[in-house]
Length: 173
Image (cartoon, rainbow, N blue to C red; front, side, top):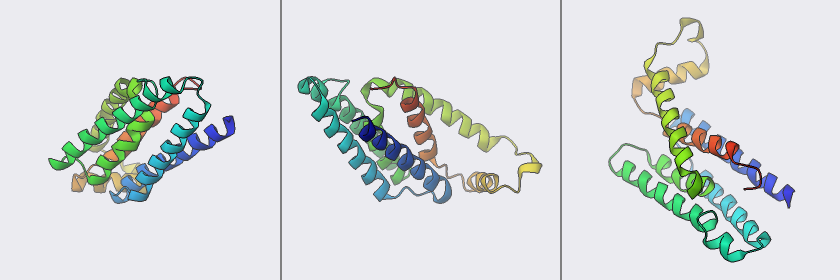
């Protein structure tokens, strides 16, 4: 049981990191990544139901699958709203769904806090001048390109906030 959970956590982290990297490099989050994250959550939810002592609580409580689904749908609606006003890309809006599943209802407030901190740090990184000695690094050149186009890869900030919440969650929850 522990091995399956560790594999699912590792798969989730790797998929989220790939989504962030893809968004940073190409301003695109592939649909396959969003679908894979959703499938990994589905496996996690099925495992949670199979191993639960109280299936009703695991399924219907705000701490359980129902809370995860509500937070995923809520974040997706928020992302869709941002996308419709051209504030987000479609990939960012879609990525909010599985992120909401993994964050869950009880971690929405810390997620929002980390999202705010990540947004402030991204703003500073895009506004403050870069030291010339680092100008030849590929990451810095990409940041300069992002500055020039004013297209912000929000997926990076979203993934960082989700991973921070997941890392700070007590073991076994």
